[in-house]
Length: 266
Image (cartoon, rainbow, N blue to C red; front, side):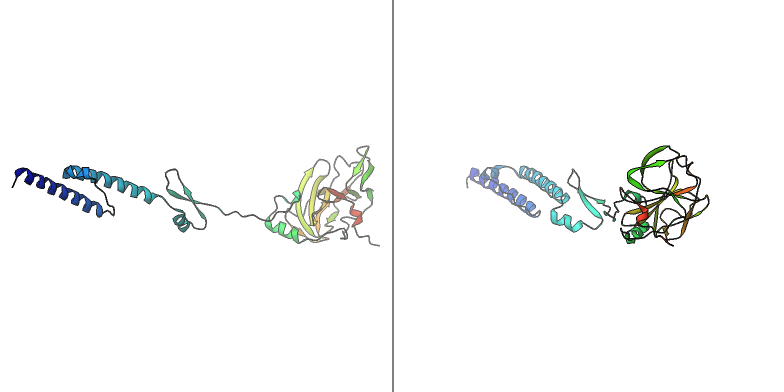
């Protein structure tokens, strides 16, 4: 037999063995690789190098795919109180998300800062144009309500509108709540001294001015007729008028004559 023919057969056998080995090796990884007619002549070592290179690329691709989370996988991992955040490297991180807790709000600015219990009580209060008020103190009205024309103020020696009434009284006289309601503010002003504001329902606010020694606190619910404070010393705006209680009623920005609601008794 021709030596050249034998050598050629040997080379072919070696090449076929190398190709078969590479194919089996890659088949175990779940991938099939093609060889062209030109690859028949390369050595087993070269085929192994190529195969290893392709395997590394294949493993790298598998690893990168493992880091990715598709929409369905992400939905499975999503839990209440958590949110999946995808970072720049494609990995998923979990971040706790606080639930939005929206509570009911009351529009009137007077209610700001009150507890949820106090605002709940205010929402239950009912007051309208036909509701009645008690006299907070007994006495003559020395300055009437008037928002259409002007009223003379002796201490100020000027005429101006009057958003409330000034009731003559004596220092230390007990002041009674004109209606059931919730105390919304206790504040001190230059004009009215210590003031107590009370929500009586449907955004109506009763204001008691020039008081002392409050018997109530902000957020307290009081019954009609309950003592809430005492008549104090008049402010610098009312010195000539003498001891008195300032009393006003309003609904949001609208000033209302409290005498339209006060019950007159014989």
